[in-house]
Length: 356
Image (cartoon, rainbow, N blue to C red; front, top):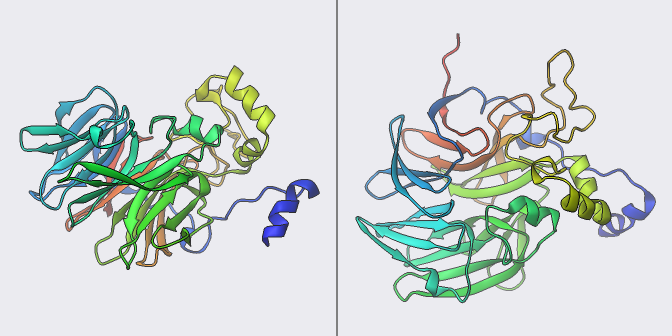
């Protein structure tokens, strides 16, 4: 499809299309059959520090994962939206209210004053040079409000570089479509996952360079893969009904004004819990069964990318599954953990659940 075709399609009445689950994105049930490690409501933000401790968050609470036990460590005044373990030691904890805390042992320092205004971060990347890349989803909404940001078509995200020793932050990119994941390419340039644009872009040098586009969902956090490459968590799916609503500005404005947010025609981290939820034809249960290929508001998907950010393989929990809303992958020597904020679980995709 050419750029001209994309511009003219709305006037031609052409069908709305989304990228298919094909090739490296081919559906399977590998997330559904992965071994469960722990249950934690709103499980999110996995990180491992230099001492080998595995950290994760659930809402406003920081936890430590010890085997299959989830131990609460510290509560915070608002939801934790990102974690990063520093190469030199310490853990950075980001809060939805703009707090950015550096924890070393029993000491904690708030670095929010390094920014000219409150930054509700969605992702972090700790460099070996003592700097921290900070992704800001939206300048006007907290990181937890990604659904309202999408429905209002906000493109006011930014990327910041924070000097941890000097305590100064520099904005290095803005106008981003809700950045949710960070990585580095082979040249050391930042790579950003733009959730609302369904793509990954490299921001080194002059103009942004797309390294992966037409992702069949909303890309989230990026994390290093053992053996090279990256893991990408795709936290929600795309479907034609939602794409249509995003084109219809007046309908969307009426929906925002009159319908409770839980029942908007919008992607979600989990779905199927209420008969009031929007339903797309094909998603209707027949004799109590929901088809795995049904259009859905929620889905489970993580993908492994090579060093050039090309998809190599993917693992799925389909429309009829329960492990939806994958938000983070942590690749360890002994396990490969995935956190599902929608399902409220942490699983190990290197191992399978025992079959009955």
